[in-house]
Length: 302
Image (cartoon, rainbow, N blue to C red; front, top):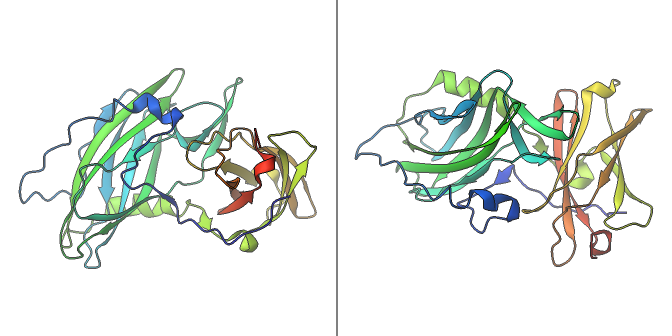
């Protein structure tokens, strides 16, 4: 059994990430692309679209702010039938990988991941976004009243009947006096509402995380108090520290307002003192994210 902790994490923080894990290594060379050059005095509240096989991707923002805290987004627009992946793609696929190399006056860059949906192609279950999605970005300037020159390198998987790697280098300038962009704001705020609220484990709807059997890596039974009475309105997703390959939770039952899933710890990346399991619970229109400590002896090789 895993004890509760006070661990909190706001969205998914990626700040010029380096030292990519094995599943990211595929794109190590492709991300070493030249940055777009922005001329002096350039004013760009969105980047240009970059076309990829099956769709296109760009940066958008809600406009200027005098606080130095900008609301932006990474927008994917995909052709009908195409999809891309959540932060943990599931049993197959490639998650979005973002870096911010070359950015100027950038103090904070946080990526939010809206709740995905399951996709079963008869061979594997993956966690996806279909056709159009915005990953909300929280951007903070190092010096409040100076522009942020934002460069984002992104690699991702995009699939239909075939799956192909997508990549883009995107740039825009965020300035205090940028005009408001109502269209971009609506898109960002729409998908920001679908980003799970981060809660401490003791405040989450997860009521128990119990070990089943004695095998390692362990198989867990996760139970949560829910308000939805229809199992179709419920889901549970899992992830772990950088480099994890956590499987897709399997729904077991819904009884007396309590839903139960089985979650394998196979693929959970160990740390010196064990690891952490991230659980995202979807309950109707609500979703919450909590991180739970995992003892070393529950992990493979523990």
